[in-house]
Image (cartoon, rainbow, N blue to C red; front, side):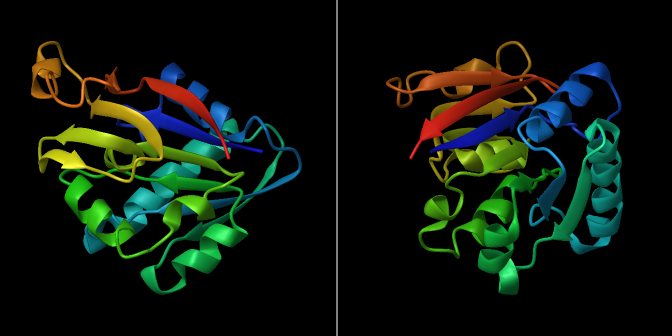
Length: 187
């Protein structure tokens, strides 16, 4: 069995061809009905509803006849919600990496809960799925390690120096906004 991780460089809410490909990639392995868990822990409370609607629009644009059931993650029900989900989508938000990581670190043995699922993260979500990241809001952070890479989302030329000479045994993944990469991890 494999777990499919999709790391996205950010701004997934924007309507464009690259983001259409990203959301299609998330849904392509499913037919019929798909349960999508929107993990919005990176966003402040005032932005929650707006973010939910933006991401639902993007998933709906890519659903190709599939029926999608949505839930927004809550800390109190998170483990059960992951079990329910086919897709776990970790949303980003400006300054969100430290907030998202703080919430995710509350759960022991989180990675095994992702086994066999499609887990996508954009911006802060991608940061948290990697082993290490550079975040403008948090600096260099050790993250969950679901995917053994160092990552810089929202990459612009020159930013790679932030993670040069840091855990060089791991691939350095430089993801500009709208770009993504797929990893399939055997479990």
